[in-house]
Amino acid sequence: APVPVAQSDEAAPDEATPGTASAADLMNQANRAYDRGDVERARGLALQVLADDPDNVRMLRLVVSSACIAGDADEARAFYAQLTGASDRAQMETRCARFGVELGGR
Image (cartoon, rainbow, N blue to C red; front, side, top):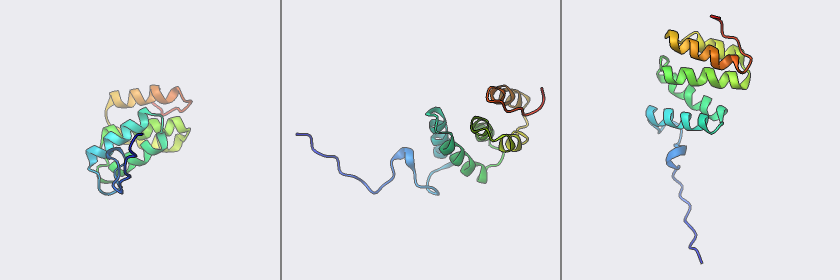
C-alpha cells in the first residue's frame, strides 16, 4: 500500500506566503496563475509586485490584461495609462479589444 505523504506547514514553492516571496517569485507565480486562467490570483500577485515596483512593465501588462478579461475597463485604463512603451500599449489595446474593452489610441 502507498505510504501517505506527510503534510507540511510550509507553503509550497508555488504558493509562497505573502510578504516572504521575492519579487521574482511573485512575478513567476503571477504569470503561472494567468497562464492557468486564474486571473484574479494573477492580478493580486501582480499588484503586490507593483506596490514596490510601480514601473514593472511585465506586471502592468498582466494587470491590464487581467482587468480586460474580467471586464473591468476602469482598472484596465488606469494601469494602461502607466505603460510608456508604444509596443506595450499597442499590444494591450489589441488584447483588450478582444474582450470588448477599448483603451484608446485606436
